[in-house]
Image 1 (cartoon, helix red, strand yellow):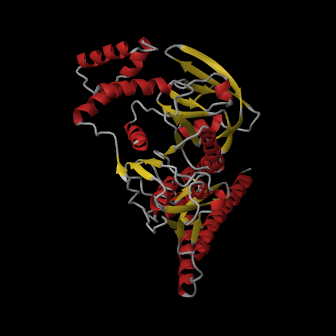
Image 2 (cartoon, rainbow, N blue to C red; image 1 turned 60 degrees about the vertical axis):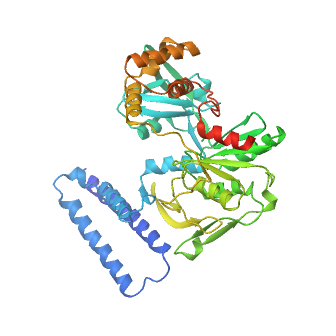
Length: 461
């Protein structure tokens, strides 16, 4: 038995080592074919040194379980990418690859919930409309405490996602707490879930509002559907909201930009590898939006990567007015490579806007800077107390459908507690909490969103 176990361990070791070597070889093949002579000999020497150290540690470290070959190789791979000092290049565990696959494919098998981990379990941020969880009556604000009878209180968010996701057609039972005391089980049958990517609506006076949440393989079709819908509804101007859009697929943003541009470059990529140098051009065959339609693009510090490509292309070509805050500044392009069940993400090139600007660590500067006023120190302390003491939740538990008079009385209660915050902020906190438990929250908030108000006024003028 011990011999079989030892043979299995050695077999595992060589599988993992082979996977590591495959990663090294893949990385080396990305570089130009200039590794010859002394360089090749030096590379061979370093790899032999790695194997020597790896073998010695694996055989001799005092705690055998920590010297597991898979743990050692994963640690070495993570260290190799950390040595690049690039936050966008990284080793990806099987779990991380799975999450990335969900985003890059735009679909996954699951129940259809956007969730957030908190101390008491998993809070439902919102059910995705039309999914099994939505149809079963799971609501925003519900607390999931167990899945299939097993507590999720001590699990991290990845572990919870693992037990909620699965093959379409399989079932899962969630134990839910709603409000303070209502506890019940919900059984749902998993289905294919589409990653949310676009929300759209019309603002009065013919202004089309298009929010792009992220760029997935489905974004192009969803944006096209929205643009055709706007056309049917007689829009005369448009707001494209890219705030807090972290990016996504390069191909997706190029296709979307092509709906607005009829000629010229959209974006170019430049790399040390010749095959990675590309210029992507717009084509009049794909244009949907009229060239004289006024457009405002909203960005903030959370707009990154692909969303910056779209903003940069529309800004450089004069096709849109950019409004909001300076964007994040991620001007690099990564490729994903799979190695066994794991993989890695590597920066292969940098992208440039139509006018040749690379915005890496710089960001896109808005044509019209607009942002929410900064909180004073006193206001930050007041907000902290409101959140920590859950005063908004308490107020809404007493007033589920608050009137203006109820909110005004609540503002007085806060002042009595020596909590002073502008009425507008308090009203917005109440609105946000109401939306948090709303399965169909509004697409936009024209009453409290100052940046959106500015964009609407700009277009109306």
